Length: 245
Ligand code: SAH
Ligand code: CA
Image 1 (cartoon, rainbow, N blue to C red):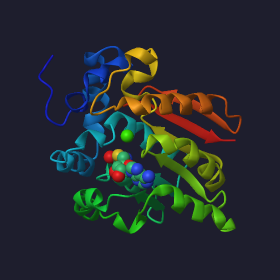
Image 2 (cartoon, rainbow, N blue to C red):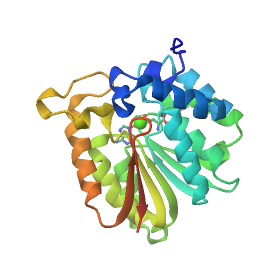
Image 3 (spheres, rainbow, N blue to C red):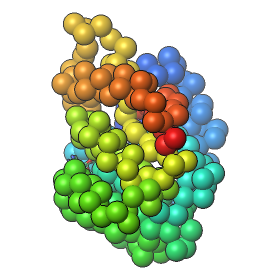
Image 4 (cartoon, rainbow, N blue to C red):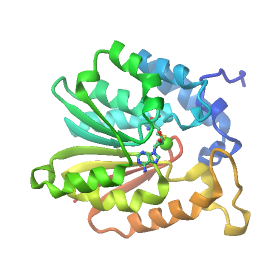
């Protein structure tokens, strides 16, 4: 196999990323054949600009992003919400995909990280579609659910922040996202660690083991939730796609 370039997801991922597909080569094949050739230039730029950040591994996986763009188009998403922006990869992807009069409300506690991607978002000419809110997400969502006109007003939500709050985000988003709208949860396979016996869960920088049980509990919760149709897709680090019933 050719040496992985600096911007390849496999080079950024840990040894556990291959657990999802059981083959690093297969994952690489998918990326090189179907994902990288179609990845919009500004998204490649965000990935490169994030490289020097100590948490650059948090940038969304390009294969998961490609799926997300497809889903956004399929449901004609116009009004969306994002929880967990970091340097803005998934946010820029969303802003590039929704129509000219679309709007994405993006929430993150870390404005400094977003400032890394912001010049690229501006250069791409889509910053007018974005409202960035610097705050923990839960109080913002609570405030939004208090206003009846927000109820069912969103077409799409992408959740990619603190994993221990996913269940709380889910309850709020089921009020904010319309019936037939989508909620996507990222990192639901947590580096493949969800399949490890409890006593053998590895503890890594990228996938701290304290979150493995939280992610597992969330996966179990979603699987039993009659309010959604769902599919857990082994793309990136696991993306669970939920459609509100
Ligand atoms: N979607 C991003 C990656 C997000 S990484 C991308 O495509 O690159 C996770 C982000 O969640 C971090 O930027 C972190 O600041 C943010 N975060 C963590 N806890 C949060 C909280 N309680 N509320 C809002 N954002 C939070
Ligand atoms: Ca993520």
